[in-house]
Image (tube, rainbow, N blue to C red; front, side, top):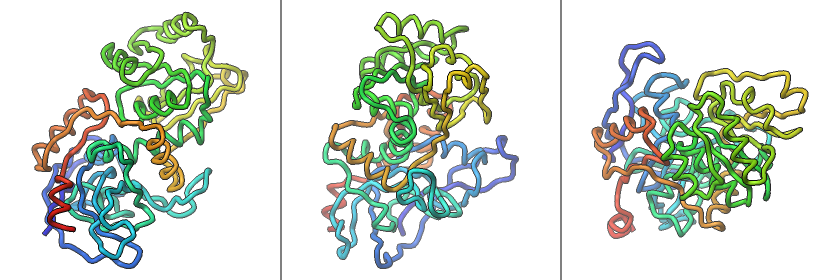
Length: 357
């Protein structure tokens, strides 16, 4: 039976418990009409997966495959995608509305509403949720794209309206969404600035992503440091902030934001609240929430990545998916050491072609 890795339920309170990984062996099931069987080639982590292990995420399905990001090979002969290398839309229930999901929304990976995941050898998916992987990406980088790419796409373009020549700040560079958002903004011709607690990460963002520069958010008045650096590059104010941190970011930046600027919040890693000062109201700042994205946005994102030949940044890769190897990636994420995505290479595509097709 195909192998998978899920979470094992143990006693503990949310935020205090840490569910262990569990190796599973699941029966193969024939795909119903409109679906296809995938042999998974690679899968990658998101912060959501770490939150699940701490029970800080709702509706966990235990003893079910974890992870939402994956790349696989279609092995169903009757599928129009037969023999194609595809990536999986990491959610379902949101088809095309730019506002919000039309149906009950569910994210792939150990979820009661979506009882499957990408950390398994074989799985069945609706063909509507599969998109052919960009040719320029290998299996590992294709698997790194779906969730962070869709989240960044919606935050940057649908909600942020980023265009060529705009000045954009992306706090907390290093995580998958922040890096992908920076890549999208740079590819669109925007001038991008970042923050981090690491000088090395800022330098890598400049050298590898093409951002203008950045500042350490550990500084007492990092917003003043940012203003000085922007001024030296002929930039007076920010058009858009694409933020996953929350906290006091708007309070700090209110003087540096243009009249009518946008702050797009796709997460709040510093806590579940964001300060909203009257100064931002008087400057007509728009604060908009953004989470994940629709199937249409997913497809638009993949098309943009293919056209611009954008390559997701990968921090670490482990071979195979034993519990010990996967655990090492969770540890890297928990310590905040990564710059880019954390990926598990499940199998070799050429070997799958020989044995399956």
